[in-house]
Length: 172
Image (cartoon, rainbow, N blue to C red; front, side, top):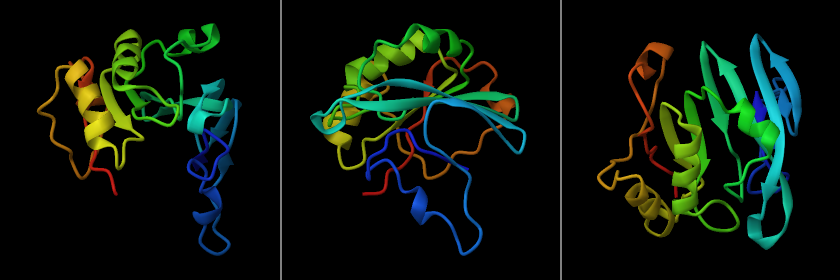
């Protein structure tokens, strides 16, 4: 399964992910979907990616008892009302941090604090670690976070967590 948040070559490589006849199920926009028992909802939101107003899809995914939220290339910390309601009880939040029209470090931190997930994973900062990731971590009081190579999660791993930040090592 592939989730496409923004129809732009930087955000949509779905056509490169298949192997022969085995092609992924591609979800590329707002709506309700179910794939092999996994429930996905997509919500339209704004992005100013590369200084152009675009439609970004924010996805929530219900997987193995966890609610994941991928904000995609979200460009504003102001969420549409229908989306605010959907983001109650998010376990894992993937929040874009960077430039090019996605959230600044300060805005990403404010939005993550509003959503109150158990785990926050910053994304979109590859090549911008100093300019984008460091301000986000500083705002969150997590300047000493060390990137990890791999993250494996189960619902029980999230018990007792409140807004913990996990930085995944980004490929340059």
